[in-house]
Length: 128
Ligand code: HEM
Image 1 (cartoon, protein in one colour):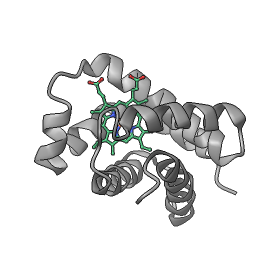
Image 2: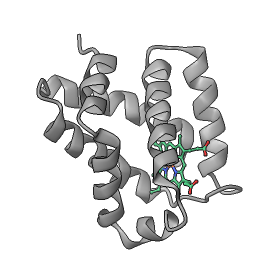
Image 3: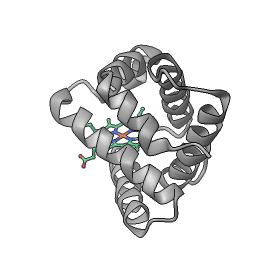
């Protein structure tokens, strides 16, 4: 079985968050616009915490579920109003950078990350 927490440790050691946001912002002009006033030192830390919460949620953790429900409100129509199609861009970027930076990445890692993140995204963007 794939250990997502171990994979994420390897990714963090290799500057995953910085590379992820660099790729994400160049993937779609709407995304660049959404992050135009963002403090990325802060955002990278919050993002890493969010991914850990997604891993916890995928394992059935209550803390992860709670954190994702809070993020759903924050990203939803009354908050950041993230267009739902951008969640697919987010996911593709995550898997692409994961494959590039985790030296132990295998097709099983891709499947396990995709399953965990799909679950998180369905909490955050129920219409996707
Ligand atoms: C499962 C998917 C996602 C996770 C886990 C996630 C995680 C987070 C976290 C932890 C924050 C910080 C929340 C806080 O301030 O407490 C955040 C903020 C934000 N997210 Fe996401 N996010 C996801 C998807 C997306 C997508 C698809 C977009 C748009 C392309 C997006 C755009 C933003 C923006 C614009 C902010 C606010 C940045 C700021 O404060 O300037 N997120 N996200």
